[in-house]
Length: 594
Image (cartoon, rainbow, N blue to C red; front, side, top):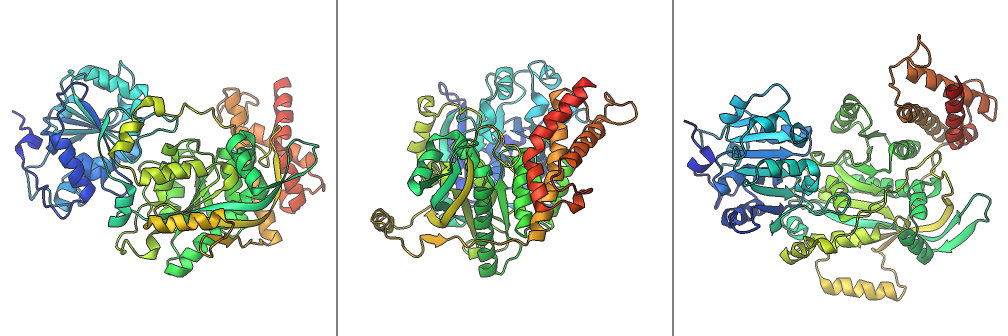
């Protein structure tokens, strides 16, 4: 007969100095919660990044004296990490590493993973770990094999995902099972809030005070004036800082141009590099790095090219890339062979690289949830270093025209959040409706009738502290700013970076090559054609046929008439990058005609 280990074993929780304060307090909240009360079977816990969320998930079955627990992760990578924490043979086994258990018998873990598991494994287990993709759909083979009372506790890691239909399948399959959601943020990218009353939250302000997470400062790029062309053929317009701020708040097209046009993309990159250089010099830690957020695949490549042009080792990860390609980039990052990693929400949950110290915002965040997920990548403290050492500072850089200020303000409120904040947040009438999707970029960041940012003058970096220790100091600074008086610490003039002409040309050539490959992939996907198929030519794969056609058209289009790409000038490359969407359209029409 199976012994229910979580009910039989007495763990060492109270007074355990190996556990963090948020873990202890959250454990107590779970232990004291009455899951049998009306509408109380599903609850939530909010813990910031670095506060021991994975450990709390391991402790929760003890708090509820669970007979058998299902632990659900949002992806395979997190599921592997959680299973490792719960496997006794692992040197980093959580229960012994944190002195929760002195010795065996230990709770028995199992996993649901493809065909490598069977129901017998699950019946022998105390906790079953899986990723949500294994349990999707009502007719899922695993769910069909298990009775509705097989689990008495379900733990949702990154619980803000749990409003999706794939998670509702589990609620319906196990209608009486207690449910606990744990997340660093209660909101998803679309503004929906995770289900269940928040019975405990640990403010970021406390996490900073305790040294669990880095101290974060924001730097907002404020151009004194900005020049842009509203539509092709229009006269260039010069606008003030206040107008840039207003346009960023009200005009989605202007926001997109701010983060993708050459003039402003350059300033964000330069500002983030300057901050990184200063941090590396002041801490003597050359491993500190930048993480940048981008809009889409093309924009990722634009941002990478800009950083490379400015002398940084940069690369990107993206969900459209093969997993092995992303893993190679991860390895380069872990081996400190990169200065900059660019992503489109790909380095989110489950990614842990504490040397990421500067977050450069090139994308558009309409809601707090995804913004916090991105900033969370720079919040983990570096192991083995005093958490209050300057090396454990973090910096977020964004442009005033990208309309990030409002989300930053929400982040400040969240950092100080108490229980009342989350009680209000769960009221769905207060949740922002799902935003319309921002369009992607193309070519040189313009595309369509978007405004083109041509120049910006005298850019100042304005320091925005996430947490102010003394409210009186904050009030005094606000008075000075309203009076037009800048303090030396609050404003810093951006020092521009001048790349060599050779570096600029090389970066543009690499960008053109990358954009061509992306264009080929998009064209094939548009027509539901496989890369390795042979629909155009029985002797060559589709990808090679389309790429060759685009390359040939590029050779015919190059302004200087240069015979090879190695001979293209910077002006040639600028023209070709801008013309690429029209070149692709021409090739598509040629292929359609056969």
